[in-house]
Image (cartoon, rainbow, N blue to C red):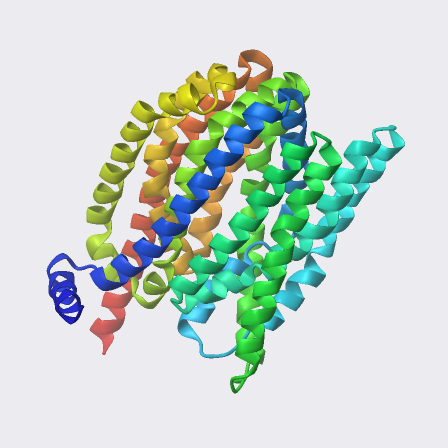
Amino acid sequence: MKLLKRKLKYFSGTVGVDLAYLTRSTFWTTILYAINSLLSLASIYVIARYLPQDIYGTYKYLLALASSFSFLTLSGMNNALIREAAISKVNILETSVKIQLRWNMLYTIAVSLCAVYYAWMGNYAFALCLALLAIFPAMQYAYNTYGAYLTGKQRIKENAVTSIIVAITSSLSILFTILLTDNLVWIMTAYCLGSFIPTFYFYRMINAELKSKPAGEESITIKGLLQYARHLTFISAMPIVAAQVDKISIFQLVGPKELALYSIALAVPERIKGYVKSLALTFMPRLSKRDIGNIHRVFYTRVIQTLVIGFLIAAAYYITVPLVFQYIIPNYVDALPYARGLAITVAFAVVTTYTSNIFRAQKMIREIYYSSIFGHLSRIIVYPFLVFFFGTWGIIYALTAVYVIGFAQNIYLFERFARKQLIKTDAKNGTQ
């Protein structure tokens, strides 16, 4: 083991990457991804076999409708806390959760109003499901912040193990419920409780551990944390809405069965993108500690590396995804063209995640706003029209264009920011 560590340290200096940390973080993130992928495949299999397409489409619509209001939560707290935990020794987890619980009441009120509307329209199943989604996700969004804290402290193993247990509990509760009934309200109850209960348990456990240690002065840290979290929350408002407009548009304009096909087609690409984002988050603490000059020196090398990795992943996905439909979900074979059409978004998701993490780690507020506004505002505006004229394919065309243009935009924004910072640094050094 010591020999391996020495070798990793030696090669780290050669390639300019901390290979020891990369190996450790990649291992646990990959374990988490593998287990989540198996759970996802099991869920897809059970859903395809036991749940009618219209019920599944309706279930995804209700989740999308409630999630479209999650911009009213303090969603930026997780990324802000990762950065703060990486550079600060102050215990701010409990305070950050209390702030979120108060803030997230806005989400609860908005989704509750939707529940009231459907109850008034006489659709009590929709109303009950939305009532559940108004309460439990609002609390879970706050309590799952412990994962961001662990990531910031580079406690990758603990974060992965707790995430695995939450994923298993959540998936099994939904799967067993689907095996017993196709009642929408019971399925939504399983979804809410299966995730909330283990999340709350792990938050209590980790918070108790932190309370047992001496507390530092947190007032200044909390003020800066909340200010940055608000920025990230406002920035993430449009992405949150944009991520759900496609599903809402398909349900309203095409119907629940077409939404079921689209949701199945998204399952594997979104799982891959989720893995990439989880792996990238483990490097945010390192990016937070580096100055912009060090990042700029290796930026284009990393861009090329992530592009190559992205296209290799996309090619492997494009070749193998038909096997998933053939052997696991033959009932949804009509979704295969959609699934393959999403391959290019997988390729560009890798490099876009890398550049976006730099923006957040370096607190590049203006660049984060600019990169967010174009892609997500365009989705919100054009998705309903594209679904109306082209059906589900309109969404896939738009997604591909947004990823490609967003990649080019992020490169430009980073280069402009880096040049300005380097000029300021040179001018400051010249006057000394």
